[in-house]
Length: 438
Image 1 (cartoon, rainbow, N blue to C red):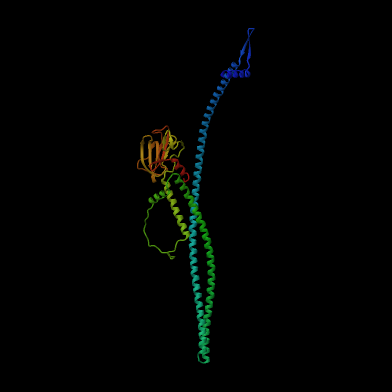
Image 2: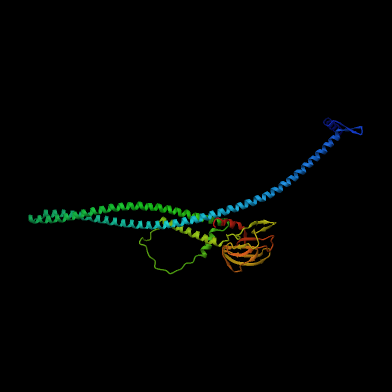
């Protein structure tokens, strides 16, 4: 069976590559060289192998060249994209700052308008109460006049009955009757005049009350609009702060409680309390909304106090390059970010705090530790110069040292760490979150 298969393959090869003869002439002699089917197949296989190897080697060299060019191109593209992102973040920070200033201006204007509208509303309420009191007095006078008129009518009827029953002389009865009629007529005229005057005053008071009611409705509508604007402004002021604290992982309620505990002083001389003539009436809806706005404004103020105490600023103001990020590096955890720049570049504190360490520490080289409020700490490593002492109080953007290459370092840079209750967190979360506030 194998022999039959070999013979079949050989016959196929002879049909595909028939035997060839080559004539070689040399010095007048001619030689014939026969090329069998097997020889031709070997020659073609060798040629194909050489051509394939040449193409494979060329492809490998081309792929290596393209990969090297692509890596360099990718590095340049990454660096350009990073610089573009930094420019966009800077523009966004400026826009947020402008929006915050505009919101503050709108808020101040709205507060002034609310104060003015509150004064006008109180004046309108006082006028309305005075008119209601006047209308009540007029209605009481009118009621008294009607009672007097009824009494006069009853008196007249009684007089007529008395005249009819008495047996006085005719002249005397006529005289008494005339006097009674004169008195009754005078009282009726006085009552009619008083009633007309009271009706005129009541009509005028009703018109004034209608006008004041319309004016009060307009003022209430305007007051509602102003309150809505103020609430929007307050919400616009609070939202970036809430977003910022959420991004850095700080509990807003605990933060406000800590600020409230540290800023809760009260005092001053006391004076006797004045009592309002309006009594112990329940507060109005406008007063309740105003109180809510004041509470929100208090929270905004507490947020801003907390912002001033958290490390949210940039430690390097000059030109620098991010050379390493937060996270795994070289098989170990890198607990900060590296900012590379020239030796001597100024380093600034990123928030208010107290210096707890200033000296040499293994790995960090020259190191500064600053303890901030609310359990946060910042570290500044590899410094060439330390400009603060232990126990010294520093504020945001205070100059504390200079960039260097001390400790375990491959070049001049700043190693910047942020720790919350002893645990290292990504400093970029604080830096990016602060761009929505500053």
